Length: 139
Image 1: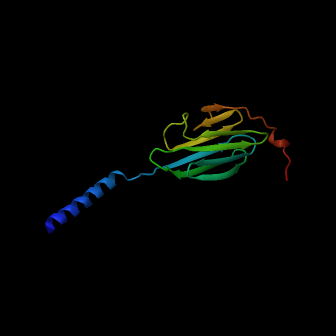
Image 2: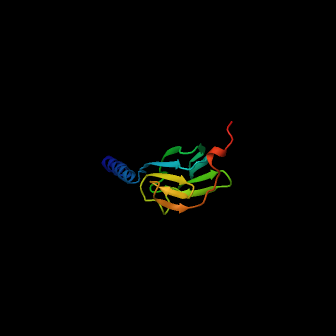
Image 3: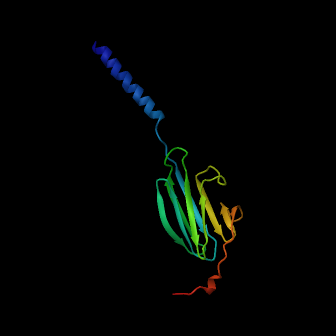
């Protein structure tokens, strides 16, 4: 009787240990970069369903990098909004259709569009018209 109870407890423990090993969630590190190649300031806000990186202001030719973990296996819904002077705004899904399925991606903002991983690989077009930097007032 004692051996049967001990065998049952041992079997249940072994079953729980083996199923737990297969259901473990592995979180991958991701890195997203945004580079402002415009001659004007931009406000960038990147976020996912669970995290919000808040507003970051980038001057001309400045960049930022965000590091975050996948929230679930394969779930990398992460997007950025870009706001500029004179009514310019744009948003983009960081890991959308244009992006490959790898973890680290750098996006380049230029006056004529959005570029991925190099300033020559255009994935979206727009026309952001702003006056030359020399015409801005200085404090």
